Structure formats: structure tokens, C-alpha cells
Length: 474
Image 1 (cartoon, rainbow, N blue to C red):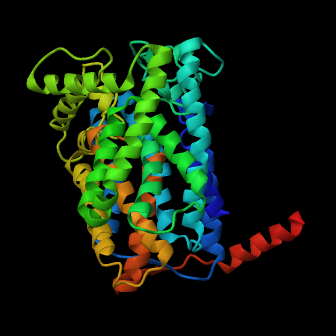
Image 2 (cartoon, one colour):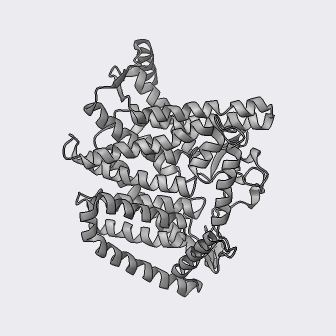
Image 3 (cartoon, rainbow, N blue to C red):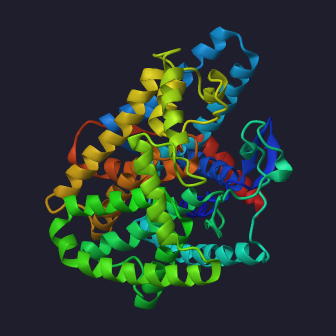
């Protein structure tokens, strides 16, 4: 049941903009209920199973625990300030963070079946077909005011702390000339682009490494690839460009020979798909996404050089201001930060959230949180790269070898997005993808190293109680 629910969690996290009900200003989403069910069944599994949980006591685990510790310590600043709003916001965000963060311990402790990871990724690949068809449809639906052009957002958490009226909120998609960026079921285009780049990883990495694809059907694989490339262009996202560049750079570093042989073919096919898509979109909207990309990137480069001119709707300058503000907030409480969730209460620039995970952690959880989040990603990179480069020596299955490659590039993409574009610190999707890497690192490390922790939560009385409930249910 835990594995089925985990697959479901990967399918429902995109619906962040849609709540089931609210509690104290927090919109409870489908992913929250799915995570709750995961924790319930995981707890039952722990206390009714006699087998031991084995966790390797390595530096990754230490940083994982340090981040949890720093989130609690961050409450010192709001508590000492006596500001009731800051204290309430801290406790509300802390509870939410611990709730979504706990999923990493499920990846550590659950005994996954051998084929679970293949089933998960195959499901996501098939899922992407429907998401992308809807995303491409929305592109034209917004031009001609067709049904479902905009999905109304009802999550009270998305009103940006009083800045907007809930009735005014729909999916966020800034208009560039006659073109509205694609969002599909996601709240905004960059969020959609992150999902798309993960689909590219699921397809590209096994292909480059000459491994069996997750879906053994050429037509479906081609369909997924074409739809994904079209959707990536339709998002008109700098985050998409950053993600793809990071993936390509990673392939050049870790798979240079295989990637070099196939680079020309991949580039030609991608360009053909992009150019055809661009011609079709330009025909209907009189706007070329490729030309807009060029204009947007040119504007960003000029902004870096000091120019105030940039394309309408561009957020680069605003994001750099947020990074600067994050450091200013950090100076107020350098060790423990201003309190989890309290970024918006410690500045007067009408900025509500940090837009990079390091600035988010540093400003709200201080130096301890900043070190923890850097440590998590750096230590994960260390182990994944180490295992990736020695996988012919260490004893891992074919399935694990394929997952190891995918996981390394997922972490490259995740780090790129979170450190340079958006902070998903308190979002489930970050820890779901990080959890894949944590599972692999722990699973391989417990076989290679002896510094393991053995835990058992088995309870005979509780097991008898659950057996009694089963009999009663029948």
C-alpha cells in the first residue's frame, strides 16, 4: 500500500493550486491527504513487521537531521520578538515543513520491491502524455477563449498573503505579445517546465547509457518525447533552459563518449520539432516563441550589464532583488534565522517569498539551515557520483544501475532549479525526488559500509490489535 500511495503522490503533487479545505489559512491539498495515508500505513508497517530497518549512518543522514533541527531552532527569533503574527506563522510553517519532510524517512526505511522504481517512472512517463496534450490544448484555448483555457485556483495559500482577492486567482501565465505561456494542470509555467525536464531525464539517460528504456515501445517513447519538447517550448520558461542546460552539461561530464556520439542526432531531431512547433504557434498567434526566447535572454544579459530595459513580464531583476533581500534578512539573526515562514514579515519591499532554496534556508533558518541545505545536496552529489563512477565494481542490479543514472541527473536538475530559480523547501515534490536519491544512497551504502544503524519498532500487542480489527472487519 505504501508503494501505491507513493506513486499516487508523484501524480497529485502538481495540483498545488487546488485545495480540498482550509485550516488557519492553509489550503489542504490532495497531496497532503496522500502523504497522511502514506505515514499511517508506513507506521502500521513499522510496528507490525519484525524485520529490522537498516540505515547507514553517513554524512547525508547527518545533514538531513541538521535541517530538521535548524527548522525547529529558527523559532527562537520570532518567539523572542513577541510578535504574535510571526510566532503563529512560524509554528504553522514548521508543522507543514515537518509533515512534508517526513517523507524522506519513508524512502530511508521502507523495504521497496525491486520493480517499484520502474513502475513509478513508467507511470510518470504515461502520465506526461495526458498532461502535455492538455498543456498544448491550453495554448490555443487561451487564444480563442475555449473551455478550460484557465483553471481557477481555489487554494487560499496561493493568494500571496493578502496581496490578491481569492476570486481573482487563476493559473499564473504572463502574456508575451499574443502568446500565453502553457501551464497544463500546474499553477504556473516554470513549475510545469520542471516536470517536463524530469520526463526528459527519464527518457534521455537510459538512451545515452545504452540501457533498456523504461517503456519498451518505440511509438509511445517517440510520442512522449515529441509532446515534451513541444510543451517545453510552450512554457517559454528560463527555468526550462537552465534545467536542460544542466542536464546536457551533466551528460557531457559523466557520459562524454556516449553523449558525444548521439549529440548531433539528438540536436537535429530536437531542432526540427522546435522549428515546426514554432511555425505552427506563430501562424495562429502571430508570435514566435523562439524569437521571444532570444529577446528574453538578450534582455537578461543587458540587465546583468546594468540596463533597465527588459521584456515585459520578465522577472530576472525582481528575483535578484529577492536574493539581496534574503541576505539583508539573514543579518538580523545570522545563526538561527528569522523563523521558518517569516521571510515576508522581515522586509518592507512587498516581497513574500524567497526564490532560491539557499536564500530561503539562510534567511529563515540562519547559518545552521544554510549549511544544512548545502550539505544535503553536496553530500548527495558526492555519493551518487562515487557510486555512478564505480557501478561496475559495486554489486547493484541492472534496475538499480538505471535508477542510479536517472537519480544523479534528477538531483542535478533539482539543485539547478532550487538554487537558481525557485525554492521548493516546504513543497512535497522536492523531497519526493530527493527521496529517490536517499533510497539509493542508503541501499548501496548499507552493503558497502559497516557503520549501520539497526532499528525495530515491532510491537506484539499492537500487531494483535490490528489482527483483531481485520477479523472484525471481515
